[in-house]
Image (cartoon, rainbow over all chains, first blue to last red; front, side, top):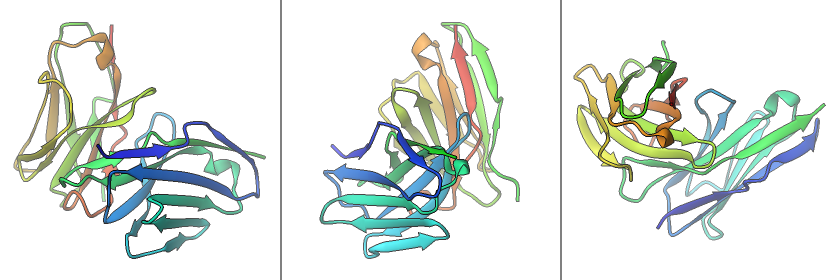
Length: 112
Length: 113
């Protein structure tokens, strides 16, 4: 069955450093992949979408890569700030359609 | 443009009762998806509706049901509540459902006692 894996352990980094989060998937060839941010007690907020024919996508301090051979996406936040502390979720459309599957998320803590 | 609105925000119910949650999507969005989020399981897909038709359903028991109205507003119902149904229920709307970003509501926090 289709599976998405994100590092379940929290990531702690110092302010100003680059945070790198990983999303791996199996039994799957998605046409695109999405990243969302979720703050405690709130719904996820869309950040970026990258398509299978795109190797990299950037938005301000965010960068996403998509390696369909490795079946992996990397999400980078450069010059991280304490306000970046949140849970980051990757999401993929399922093969059957009309359904988005989310990873469990990785909790990021940025220390001042 | 108003965002996705979910009501109520918080709810406390007793085991065995039933509950109805409501979701008003962003104007113009015809796809509405529902998710259950618990600390241990993450976001679990419940179902997706588009133009009043359920197009996909997750692996939840029949106690979980939903519907969508002609104005795209959606409701989900959980009957015979169990303690394990305590969770944050999130609704997301999008224009077509799959190839576009999803806009989430704030969620309804359901506590079953």
